[in-house]
Length: 398
Image (cartoon, rainbow, N blue to C red; front, side, top):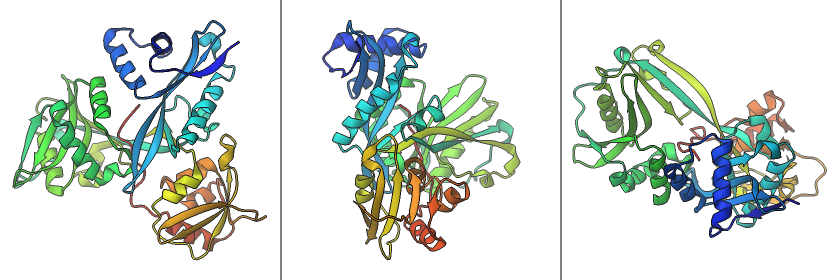
């Protein structure tokens, strides 16, 4: 008979079986380099497996606790990854059992949010996840790359990725692009990211006083393209300097590409907007594990004149399900169980998450039939509490 277990970090045999499952399920090379990277992540994670009567791993998931930054506030997040089953074991509810086990532990550990990269959006919606993070993919020919004014001062220096981890982390954390759901990158995570992409290179921007004010992570694919991986300028001068650095490669690479976690398009910065091909790409999903804790810690942009009754429908996490009284005073919220019969707002947890996290407005949810609101006045007042200048941005992958 099979059972769900959490693999102890000291259990080498089960960890190796989970690793071999990942190699098979994701068609990854079973070699020392990949195993070292995988084990590094596993040792920083909770690893749950279904083992058969003989104690062998048949299905498993990994949950890595990573802090995130939402509007200057830190929240613990459980990143779900390496969801895998052997084909002969799939289709019997294994992932549901594993997700239940992982969710129970996240609730016990007060992990408020959870992210994952889906193989199927429909599949993971059953667990309360919803699309929140999209990316914009830009592609422009070298001949059309914008020319930056030669009057730009300061300097750009190429640097070693590992030697500049701390400096890049500081710039990244200061940048507003990291404060809309992005990870707070601890040193081990930075090292892990680089271990997966040894071809990454770094360009550092310095102002007139030689103070670091931005960076660019990039990689070059010989004869094909120059790929901007992560652009983090903390000033307009830094933005210009780094773009000028990129443009100096126009004689070597036929095209430039950039896949940005910033969902706001910037085609208007091009001299001719139609010279850049821009594509919106769905990316990762998010879930609210604990609505009560989220509201108590959330950054609201306005107050409610009086409490509202919200009915949250959550079929996977029963602790969230039901009617709640929402009050917001001095930008701080409280969510308390309510016995009221009628609700000012009724929404599935997935749809409500999109509104709270800034991916969709309440009006858009009402227009698409994904939310019921008692009146326009309620919609307007609650939306004023959730008005953020940027959509969610996630620059990392796990």
